[in-house]
Length: 386
Image (cartoon, rainbow, N blue to C red; front, side, top):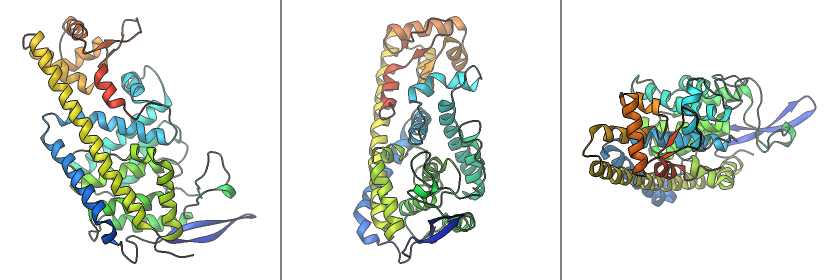
């Protein structure tokens, strides 16, 4: 049956018959009924505008953006089944990057951060267009050296894939994306739509995310790339100036509803209810990001005043404080390098910050013991605990 979103076609694979979905190009025809979305769209625009205003005006946006990006990487990867928490990332990141230890789930999550960084640099610094080529480059980074590295990183699939419980056969699939030839055509159509200006930007982002998930062009990593695209589209279209809004937590909390809304698009062309769900997520997630960033600003003000009061306006102490907002888990040697000070100066600073109750010491007793910016980590951890 054909509808605004596309239609199912019968396919044969040996003796097996199944139906694959062929999506119609965006935008939907008839067009989106914006009258039914005015209130929700206005709310989303207002909330994300407030978030962008905050990000533009906070003194050190990197204090918020970098850590929030890592939180998003954790949540987006958890949706795909990884077992790494934000605490795992913060504690093991340096060891993994330096080759001291290995952890597939942590590396998978760090790859997401690398892909986001790469995409932002290509779009903002290199002025490279958001395109199929860039999407493939992001995918290659995402799957390098982790689970899925054998599933054509950086290349669209050349075989049929399907969606269902892990290990389910094609015959039991919940949804079958378009076959390879039609998939390539659909991605070509989607690339053209990336720069369409006939719908409000947030509406366009919602349409593109759903269409990408429906096409499912990769053998693995589609969900993470699809969620990453939302942030890149918001940056590209100047909706937000910094990568400070992510929908993974919202999608994870409402996973059943998320899949139901996508299914309704494919079954009956119900784009409007999907968009209402998506825009509500933009508004709710913006509020959450504003609350978190305000709490971070408040914490930094509180600790800056404490440090200045107890440490006689030590510039090194304030530098140390700023560095642990970016690296909230660290060793003496790491903080020595971050602050460009001697080992003894770094060690003495850690002792003073411990005395003030700002940081705590890990239970490990070997020479490279780790220290934790506990209250800050607790703020960031919300929603990421396994």
